Image 1 (cartoon, rainbow, N blue to C red):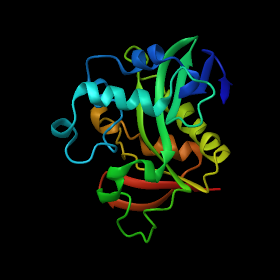
Image 2: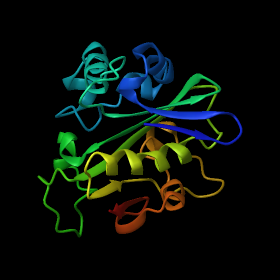
Image 3: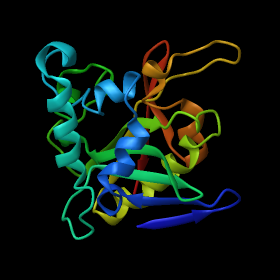
Length: 204
């Protein structure tokens, strides 16, 4: 899958079509995304106690299949700006995120089959330092729709933060995305489990 969009020459590809070096550049080495390696919903237990940095990095590399365009499976999308790797979004069947089963956000006030692998989920964004603040999560969120639908999803969910003008939210919190990003992509709110979190969804 590949998309080109507007000024700045944005290109979005399935992660297995990107190199591991490019994805590693997006995650960097210094902050929350570098430490987590998009494993928050994959590691059972407490992520910092029950996994090492090396294990999380190896898990991400295995999940994405970077550098293997013929891979049968990959776990997300990589965004390029003018040919430089700049962003990542995780999108997989909801069942791939083992820890989502025990997280109350997706299930509050909903009667959902937790084992339904036809429902996909967007769980994490990572924007490379130097590219943040440019609105790159918007095209990434939009691209998850076609990606999931092409792979047989009957619905796609997200669990974003509600952000307020003038109120700062740390990158560690907003890695799940902001509500307005998914609104613009066409997702609709289906539940409001906490003051600052909503569940949003598109049914295909």
